[in-house]
Structures are given as C-alpha cells and as structure tokens.
Image (spheres, rainbow, N blue to C red):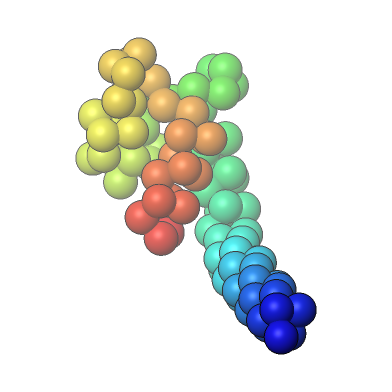
Length: 94
C-alpha cells in the first residue's frame, strides 16, 4: 500500500515538474522575439558601445527605458545594462 502511495506522489511530482518546464519554455519562446528587438534597439542607443545606457542615451534611443530608468538603475550607478532591462521584462511579463 505504501509503495502505491509513493508511486502516486512520484507521478504527481513529475507531472508538476513537467508543467513548470513547459510554462518556462513558453515564456522563453514568447520573449525571444522581444529580446531580439530589444538587443537591436539597445545596441543602436548605446552610442559609445560600452554595453551600458546612460539616461541621455536612453532618452535619445529608448524613451520607455528612459521613463523607467530610476527603477531599472536601482543601485543608482548612472547607467542600465541589457541584462537589467531583460530582468525587468521577465519580471513584468514583457
């Protein structure tokens, strides 16, 4: 009896795990096109090609990023990176 219960729990755990992977893959697939566009726009806005956007670079090339600059630059470094913007996109759902 115990082994049947353990088997049921194991099957349930596998099922839940598969659902989580499937959902993560769907999010990844949906975000890929957005990330590709974001990367192109980021490179175009990053005038000195240092991998960082200052507030002025964001204002000139990515106004929505400029609007959220203070939120994205939580550490107040004076710039934001592509990875920081991607993290915000993932957190907010795009």
